[in-house]
Image (tube, rainbow, N blue to C red; front, side, top):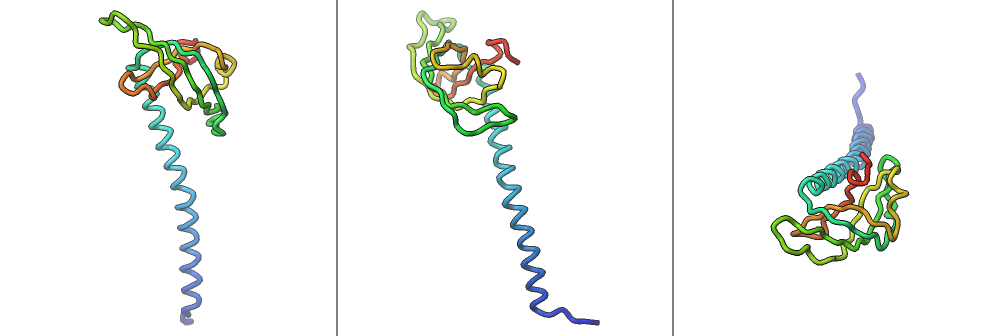
Length: 139
């Protein structure tokens, strides 16, 4: 029976360490991205159900460099004009909001600078805003 030398043990430890390191470097970013996307989706769904409806004119838009399932994440600057809320005499004053929104490919032609789009926003935090693609006829 042969005995295993310290050099051979070191090689085995290095190989196992390299494999574990590769797995961690691969899996951790994937888990973080999935968590981020699910959080974004949850916030968007909450805004669509509970947010204040408004019309917004797109002032500027630009690429973020991110695409998910061929849908680009786009950076928007909106001029938001809230609609009157029930129980209030006047609507909230217009405001400017910035957002990064995942835009479905089929909706790209309808979002351009100068276009008016339906949005939903959180009145306590006007930075939380999303385009209501359902109101535009998209699923």
